Length: 169
Image (tube, rainbow, N blue to C red; front, side):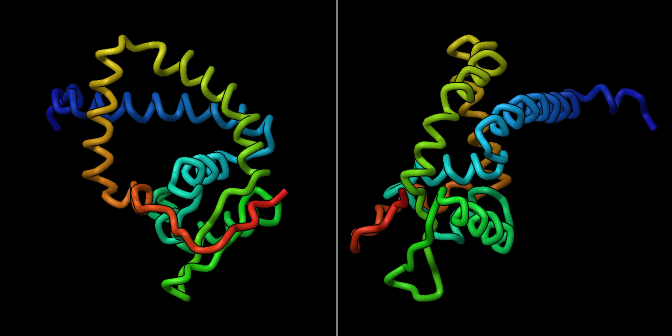
């Protein structure tokens, strides 16, 4: 095999992406653990908090997190037992339900986010000039949309306007 193929900048870019993501993930995991969250629980809470009505259909949550529908069900079950979110029936489709972040879940995010943002600033965004950061965001969105077209499923739909939701304690 031609040794020069391993010098291909595409291989370098992919390797750097993996290395950067792994390094950030390790730092995030330690910080999440300090707040009693796993990385996937933090992702679920963040995605719900950033969505209209602080909720997503379970299928959209699965698409956004790249978990299987059964994987999302297991995570949501655990988080619901912990009071971080609740389920709400979908009025237009009885087979579907929403995961809704509770006030307890939002409080946990409020506790976790300051440290999370410090890590992001120190180890990621603070390493880049503003123009480089904007270019990176654009590039990452393009790649994400190509390889994971469902990543924003449900995030721009208006929040359902039916009945109040008990958002926990």
